[in-house]
Image (cartoon, rainbow, N blue to C red; front, side):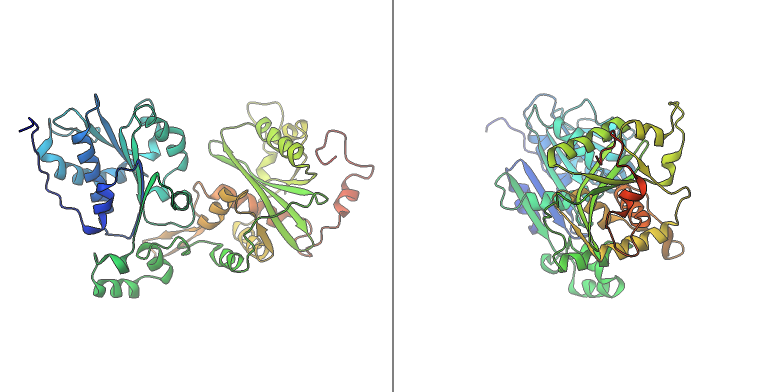
Length: 436
């Protein structure tokens, strides 16, 4: 006998997850169909890792998009499978339990990221990562793993091409990553009869995404799914060489507590070329002015118009100047409408524009995510889509492009012949303007 005590928990892994339990790689990503058992598998991976950890004061975590969701999905699983090795009854208010060796496992929601700060993890599961706030991983959770070289597992079902898709692509042929896709038509977890019935009850896009783990399936209610599909098929989402002799317009969506988004667009004949995209949260106008100046200096750009939503004219309470005046002092001459446009009119304008638009997927990756995920909410009570778009982390980039599509002065004719320059600056641009 080696003096160790053997504990047995009431869990037997499904065949599809044996490799996940056996891997020794630090990072794991699992893309699995609905009802595959990925949450149960990840909870039991946490329990086993916590029970076997020999570091002092081991801490493990499970992070879902919302704390209420973590409790609903994982709390009962965590209690059920770990009960034989509890040190004390679970803490229901903190969603935390302690094992016989002093290790703790706690549930978290990425919607309340402040609750995570200041701690550390020896291992963490990021569940439904496709719908989490992406900054929580990079800014908070990843640093929590650094000093003790903790591990992380990302699990979920595709929701378009977003941060979860980026991780999936990055993990391809990467020796530091364990990678697993579990499709319903290959896993034998759901019966063929059930799959056939689900296919009849679901739209093709829903079935491909939820059961066949397709990252390319259109998101339910996505406004620009068809246009982006055509752009992919026609090769218009590709690297773009910026024309040095063509002005670069910018299109903005202004955030307060949330993100400010900026598209950088060239108009060549009838083509619209989205050559860059920038997004940040909590920064002032001076920050964005510096971003524009850096791009002008580093890339040799000449700026055209800077398109803003109508609320750029709002007077700021903490400043003697309006937003328009503040921007002008920073060298940005704002172009905007005096009244807001109809949102659905703007969405249709973007749809028309996308049919002659090219987008650089590397420089505009975050902007592409916004367009792919910009959608209407589904009303479960009325069984129809709501009138207005869902407001989330993706709406800022989509709103910025909508601002451009509805305002660009030659949108109807597709002409970009420089007449605006002569109309606006009869004797040339002012010395402080960035178009100079």
